[in-house]
Image (tube, rainbow, N blue to C red):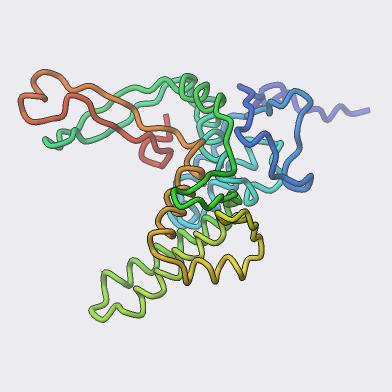
Length: 274
């Protein structure tokens, strides 16, 4: 009997690290995510095909490349389009570590002087910080409205971001951009509504009907809307990688650079690859 076992099989990629999702899988159905007994899921390094996916502009724009890479590197996710925003940064960070190691160089411009420089980031330290976060799904505005958030899935967020990008192009290139401005406003309202699961009034009346929430946002005082937006932004960004806190050199300070400043950590094609 012929043995068809591939002798190269033992060199196939294996999980490099295991991570716990900030969401703990709370928002996923069995057809989206397969939990493990330990709560930690295996992360595989990227393949050459995965790298090419992250270098395809159109796929990067519509989110398809991120979905393809997560599906390839995170077997527990059967449908990454339904991944909630709480887990995105954690998974990309874990894939980066599994593929290229524990450090990443980030290029940035120093404030004031715009001098180009770089710094090295300890990725496991960032991952540990995120893993300790226990994301909350509710908060109260200054006006007394209790907001319970509905985390945005990756497919919803991608569609909204594409629409915002397209409308922004029209807005900047067309002299009479009144119609485009209205569309951008509608997109922002849609993002707001999509993020709200329910609102409880100061009188303790709870509303979860989408149309009633839409009518409320469309007709309430702009002060209340801004308060709700601020609350939602804080809730949505709980599990995002926080900016690095860097200190300026004495020479930089003499040139007007603040003594300390922030540098965002982003996982885009400019710094994702080793």
